[in-house]
Length: 305
Image (cartoon, rainbow, N blue to C red; front, side, top):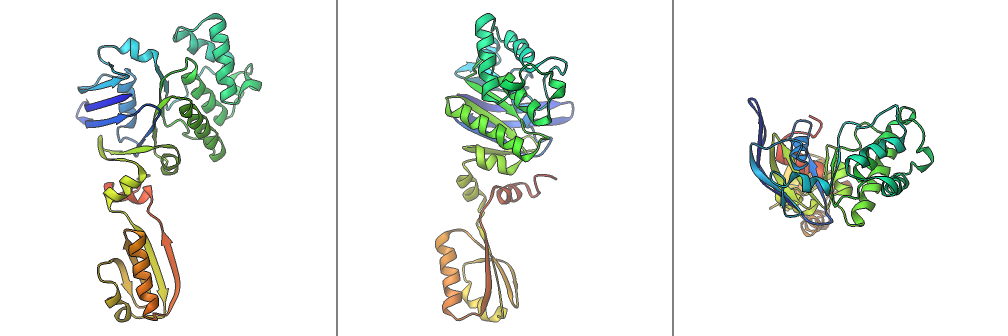
């Protein structure tokens, strides 16, 4: 549904994007994960036709955004990071405005407005001024403006920014349900848990380059991320050292051991050898592979840095 090849963009001396390549299948939620300034919004803006690329191509549903921009925008919904609403207007009036820009009118516009207000749970507040809405309600209405024309593809640029956890979950549910109905989505975020829960595939982007992409399992394998196992007890390093051949040991000392173990069979084998040898173990804790670990392995920093 979306194919991006060799995308590059500079702002003066700043290289915002450098050779970005990815493809998104129909009905997929594709996540862009990266810190502020990584290139997420620039990529979204180019796909939406709001910004021109220096080089590279973007095709949406077989159409080139540079040549068929008007036709592409007819099937695209865009939910920007900034709230794109008029505070003095009601929710219904805002949606009539945005729907009108997409060419909707009359009965069709009224029907689509009622439909998206129901989807985002704002039917009972449809005629209240937006200035009276909470942050979470504004984010839901902002999302509905991108859905008003029933797009095939929706571009979501950090749509949960600055709202409470419950409001974030509501928005994630709306997006998940929308995609199950046939939409394709590109979702940018710097929240690790959102990418893990929502996206079928994820691209990790930093400094304008995609460092890796794939399912969570593929990213974990690609980064060599494994379970981190911490063992404590009344043992010496000399006792356990012969039992750990082939295991990556991150920390080793008397009474304390931390290992990186790639798979379940290796984990069972390592712990089995320790228990069989009668090593006096008091506690074992296991931290499963995570997207956070993959991100840190690929970028050398935490996502919030």
